[in-house]
Picture 1 (cartoon, rainbow, N blue to C red):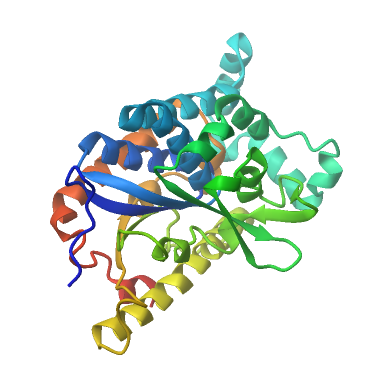
Picture 2: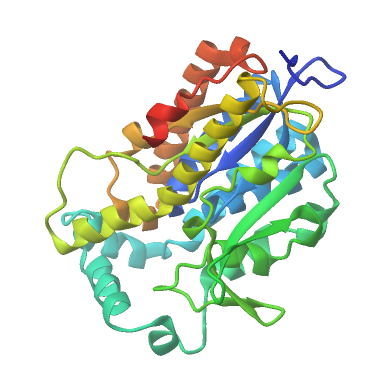
Length: 345
């Protein structure tokens, strides 16, 4: 059995696979924050899509500037900026909160208006100037020169090629704000992001997140998936909005489940001695699963950038990661802690 990969300080190495999910990415912020705070793991590589991609690039910039503490400060600063950008100032914010809060976020007039517009018009029609405050936010808060310079960590950002329908994978050395925006481009909300003449949509359609790049040229055989999109729900969706939300969850988990099936197949071949080193190493798969606790938040809350909501989701992520590490730290580098068959079958 391969020994756990460790660095010169004796810390175990691990790879992270970060799902997208809008404001629910604050859960992932909490998970990463606790891993950094705990200090027993070194993150070798991160694969991310959409909000997971944003967490990844913010982590890299912060780590370059100040190591673990720098990454933690960078993540908090970024999510605070997301909250500030998503809110109005002064009396406007207070007046709108008073109007919308009695409805609940997903029943507010503003949310229903946006939901209606995106169902009956494309972003090329209702946003012909292609205005995107998220792009402006990333440009203001992330220095991509520093992201590309952070050689201590490998980054893999996924997007979906609109023309071919295939996954596109962008590595740290090439990353710009366009690559991250491509990874977070929901086609009903934003115009496709063109890079070198190729249009891209959200990476979650084909890799949420992509696992396969984490199995190549990495010292660590361990990959920790931070999952925020529920795979299963007991209720049958009945309203149009509930049906659409569930379809989105199924779609954005589909690529991950297919990859888990492939990983399980490779693991069985290695365990049976049919393949093995040096050509194939056995990967160990782990998961911090926020789906159950995050299910208390509606799908509409992925657009809720209020600071109180983001901090609450961060704290859920921290608590979930703390419990997972307490239960499974000794298993890292030794065995899987995710039952792959149960996950995909």
